[in-house]
Length: 236
Length: 336
Image 1 (cartoon, rainbow over the protein chains, first blue to last red):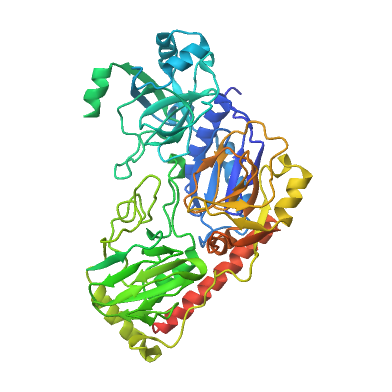
Image 2 (image 1 turned 45 degrees about the horizontal axis):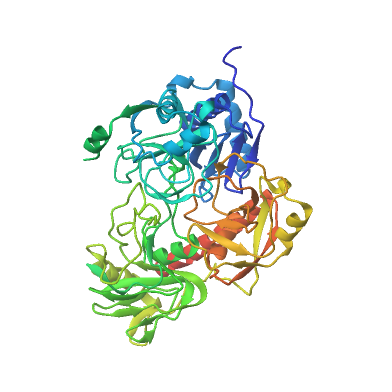
C-alpha cells in the first residue's frame, strides 16, 4: 500500500496535561509530512477536552484542558485511542494540508546580514547562495520559539552550516535565516543566532489580524527574490 | 469608569485564564501564573471565570478608584491598605469613589490577583485579555501598568458593586470603616514552609542524564533565581548537565516542563513559556503544583518529589475538588 502512513514510535506523556505522539527523533521531511496530516486529522476530530493540537518537527503534541468536565480519567490512553482512530480511518492527503505561500525576499547585503559571511564559509559566490536559497519549495515543519515564527524544511544541503557563534541580541523583523537544514523567518525583533540571508517586507505576525500568523504548519513556502527598491516600496 | 494607576508596582499585568488553542502558531497560552487565586478573586466579586484580573508581583501598585467598586485581593499576602487601613484579603470589599488602594509588598507568596466586579473593560486579543509581554499584545497595550494609566472598568461597575454587595446579605459587615463580609475564601496556593514540595514526573529525556544528575534532581533543594520571570523559573542548585546531550530535535513544551540548557541549571517553564524548545527535559511538574510554585518569590526554595502520571492526575483532581468547594462556598455567600 503506497499511502500507508508510518506508525508512531509511541504516545508519550508530556506532563499530566499533554500527550506527545512521537514519530522520529531526527529531522525527516517525509515523517514531518505525516505529522502534519495526523495533526490535521486530530484537529478535525475536535475532541472537547483537547485544547491544542501542535505539530512539531518529529511528532504531534495534544494539550488537554485539565479542568474540562469531559476530560477522560486516563487522558493519555484516550489520546492514543484518538491517534489510532485517525490512522485506521486514513489520514488526509498531504496536498490538502497547508497552503502555498510566496514570500518576497530581498537578498541585498545590507539586509542580508550574514550573506557574505555564509558565502565565504561555503566557498560560494553570494549570488549563488541566494540562488540556491530561493530555489526550493520549503515546508513549514513547526511553528515555535516565538508567535508566528516558522521552522522551514527543504533547505539545499549545500547550504548546511551551524548557527552563528555569537547570537544577535536583536534580529530585525522579517529576517530570513538558516542553520542546519532548516530556515526560519523572524516575526518581530527578537534575539537569535541563525544566519540571516535575506529579509521579507511582509508582516509575519500581528495579534490584531485574522489570521494573526502569516504561516501555519504544513504550508508550502517559496521565496521570491525582490530588489531593494521593491523591498522599500512594500514596506510602506 | 477607570482605575487610576498612581504607582505601577514591580510588574502588574492584566491576566485571565489564558489564550488557548493557538500553540500550533507558536502563540503562548499566558494567563494568570496562579490560576487558582485568580479564580477565587473573580468569584469573590461575583464575576464570570472568564473575566480578567490584575496580577501583582512582589511589589504591588497604588491605585485610585474613580467610582464605587467591589474588589477582592487573593493569592500572595500583600501588606495592602485601603485609605490607610489594612485591607482584608480573600473577601469582597466595597470600595468608595476616591478611595486609594496601596498594595504594598508581598509578605508571603509573590503574586496576588485583584478582581473588580464587572471585570476589566479591555478588548480580548486572540480570545484572551492576558498580557503577553515579549510580543507586546493583550491586556493593556501588551505591557505592564505604568504610573498615570487609567485601567478601564465595566461601564456599570459602580452599580454592579452595590447590587452584588447587597446580595451578600447577612454576611455583610463594616470593618475599619469599609464594607466587607464576615467570611473569607481559603488561600489554596500560598507556599507553606520552605522548601516547598513540588511533585514532578520524569521528563522525556530523563534517561539522557547520568545517575548523579537524576538523583540530584529529586534530592536537591532548589532556589528560585533572581532572573526568573513569567516565562520560566531558573533554579539554582547542583549542575545537571546531560550525559548524552547531542543535538535534540526541538519539540513541544508544556507548563511545568523542567528543561536543562547546556549550563546545567534547570528552568521550570511557567505561564509565558515558549511553545517549543530544544533543551533536554528532565522533569514535568504536576499541573496541580504549578500555582504553588508560581507563588515562590526569587530566593524561595523547593524540592521535587517524584510522582507518576497517575499520581499527578490524582493531585489534579484533588486540587480541582478543593477549588470547586471553595467556589461553591463563595456562591453560597452570594445567596446560592
